[in-house]
Image (cartoon, rainbow, N blue to C red; front, side, top):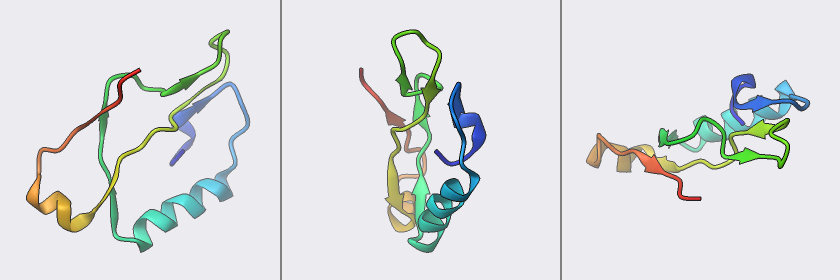
Length: 74
C-alpha cells in the first residue's frame, strides 16, 4: 500500500508505506492508475480489504504512453 486509504479493517504501518513510496521515487517509477475496484484483496467476510496489485513502470515509458491505464482481471 502507498497510503492508509488503500487498507481497511487491519493494521496500517506508516514506516513500511514510506519505505515503499521511497523505493518508487528513488527508482524513478510511476504507479499507473488501475481501473476497476478500489481494493484488490478482500477477505471472505469483507472485513479486511487492501489494494495490493500495482502496475509500476519507468518514467520514460510513461512519456511514450501518456494515457496508460492498468486493468486487473479477477
